[in-house]
Length: 117
Image (cartoon, rainbow, N blue to C red):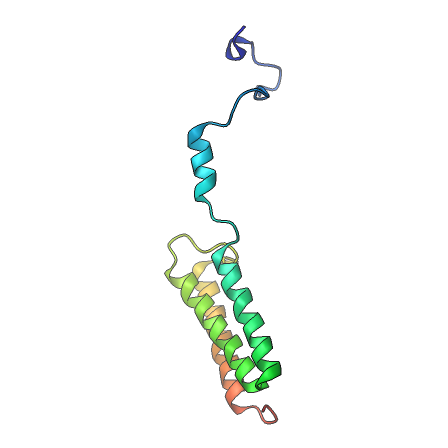
């Protein structure tokens, strides 16, 4: 008997037969989705770079890289059509303004704070 000819169970959902392979369309869709999200990897790389530069070169340069990373994240959020996964928190305007304002504040502090070498 064909599995599709069976009556629907109560609840309306019938589990897929175990012998049934995944449809080719569905399989292609899954292959098109990238692994780690580029936005998350980019921001994480910027933070790691900031820590390494802050320890090896100086706190002022590390803080500047944090500001640059925030500016890049804000620009990416502003220009992305759907919003990159990992950078979407609230509305587009809120996310962009928050990233850019934080980048400016941290950048100004990186340049003017006394005691940073």
